[in-house]
Image (cartoon, rainbow, N blue to C red; front, side, top):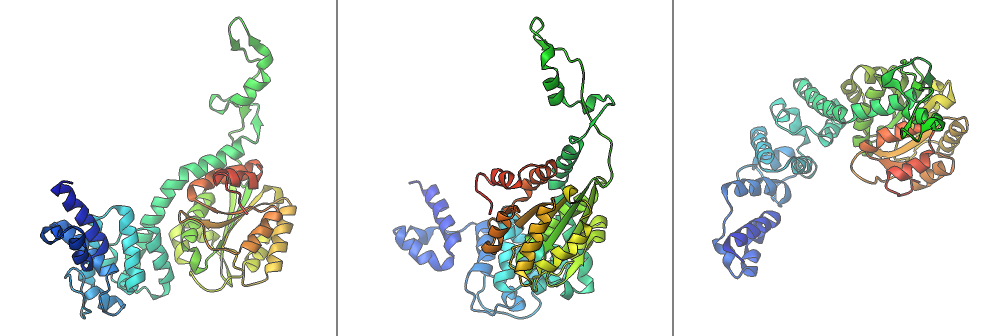
Length: 411
C-alpha cells in the first residue's frame, strides 16, 4: 500500500470519525497516523463538520452553538454569531457537493437549533436554497421579521422556479396529450395526424408491390384548445410531516391552474380548510406563504368542502395528498371517498409527493381506500405526469400506480 494511498485513506477516516479518533487511527496504522496531517481544505472541512456533529459541550441554542464556528473550539461562547455562521455556510458550500450541502445545512438547523439565525437577511442570503429550507421557513413564517421577509421570499422563489422548471414541460405534455387525443377532427392538419389510427384503418390498403400502405383516409386529432374540459382538485394536508409534499403540490397546482383546459382547485387543510386556488393561480410563492405547517388534521372536513366543486364527476380528478392520520371523522372520510369514486370521480391518494421515500401513514385507512378503488401510495414528482395522463385517459389507476412504482403494489 503506497504512502499516498495511506494519506488519502487516513484523511477520509479522520474526517468521518473526527479528531477524537486520531489516537485509535494511529494505533490501527502502526503509529503512522502520527505523521499524517490534514490539508488546509480538509482542516476547514473538519471544522465545519465538527461544528455540527461533534459534542461541543455547549448549549444547543443558536447563539451558543454558532459562536465557536470556524474557530475549531469546542466550548460555548457568546456575542454576535451570524458572521461566523455565514463563514461556516460559505466553507460548506465551497468544499462539499450540493446534495451534501443540503444535508449538512439542515442538520445544522435541526441538531444545533440555529433556525432563529435565518432571521438575519445577510445570513439567509448565504444559504443554499432547497426544499428543506423552504419547509423550515414555512414553519417559522409567523416569526420572520420584516427585514428578512424579502430575502426569504427570494429564496422561496428560487426553489419554486427550479421545481417548476423540472415539472412544467412534462405535466403540460401529459395533460394536453391526454385531452387532445380523446377527440378527432375532420379538419386536416399535418401536425395533428393520428398516425396509429390512420395506419390501423388503412391496413387493408397495403400494397405488396410497393411494400407500403396507401391511405384512403387520414385521421386527425382535434387540436382546438377547449376551456375547462376537466376539473382537477388538489387537496393538501398541511400538517408538519407533509412539508416536502406541500411544496411540490403547490408547484404542481400552479402548473394545473395555468392550463385553460383545466378548472383547477387547490385546497389546504389541518383542522381548518383554506381555499388557496386564487393564490396558487397567481403566484405559488404567495400560496406557500399562505400555508401554516403543523397542527391537527381533519381530512374529512376538507373532502366535504371539495365536493362542492364536482359538477361533472366523470370529468373530475381528485388528488388527496395526505398521510391519512385523521383527527376528524375517519368513517366519514372513508364514506365520502367511496361515494366520490362510485359517482365516477377519478380519485388518487398520494401518501407523499416527494423524493424522500416511503412516509409514515395510516395503513388501515389506505387499505380501505384501496378496497374502494382509490390507490394510495408515495409518489415521486417524476411519476406524477404519467399518473395524471393515465387518470385523464381513463386507465386503471391501481394497475398504473403499480407499474409506476416498479411492480410494488400500491395499497
